[in-house]
Length: 437
Image (tube, rainbow, N blue to C red; front, side, top):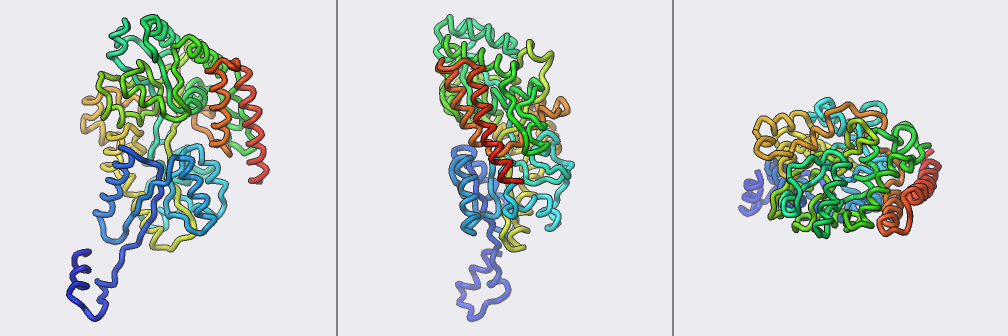
């Protein structure tokens, strides 16, 4: 159709035929991906645009997760918001409270007639972005969960059997002793310390991170991650930091560069680290389940998701919502979603995508790539393990990061730091509650 339109213009037609007057409806999509993930998103957009002639999705990188959320908020206030905005999972409560700014995905899809079945989405993923009435508010897109990445070569070179059991933190502690004694500078590092070592730690051990079902049951929630279970873990990590067994690289994913360069033996990171590790690592690696403390739980519960979902913004015309719905349907289709899962390590958001991946033999050919799926779906989530829905949580994470850094540096003990983080974070929760009554 595009060639025919171009031909009509070049032929010097003196009138606009219906064909020549036709224009694609543009849909703006703002996201937070760069590098390999940015390339894969671009490929998805190109694939959708090539699959039909009615709509054109334009993808724009707007910075990291926090910057993208802030850009979307600022754009809405200026009346320049995109049709689709990527928002990381901790921004969910903020988006839910933005009355008049967002249009629930379930409403967008139902109005368009696009293929959409809420029951097709994996429950532990869907639940994070679902209203109390059971309707999806945003579309899960890049959903990940933390796992343990293992440099098998470093273990072997430093006197540890690369097949050793690392399922518990007790076992990991023993391995860290051996690695440190062998002179390794980075036995363990981590990405996203709050998400992995407090938020997911709490879910995995079935202890509350906050009251009111971690915020799902009301905005009058209070933080609770200063209990004995969380403090014991942070205290252990603080001692590992003091002893040179835990290397802290930064608040986001700075430690990923150290692991991919072959400097660190163990790395707690998102399952989505797969794309970068597979392309850059020059060593033999494993992906294992996130360890748990047997002293705290007889067996692990389930981890919770990270990543982001796609929100549809208000203030646009009907054809643009139709285009947004068609694009979201395309992203959820089994072939596209399965490929995304296989390329990135993000969770498949639908059962069909997981089945497609399994039927293709991907898990057999790439051992460990199903660890995240199993870890998320082996058990039915509890009130403590279905996720978090807390207002101002991006800022609360900043507070947590500050207090954890005080533990790693030896300036505070774990209990003092967690008590301070809870007290400071609760002040933000009260402000959010007051603003959203």
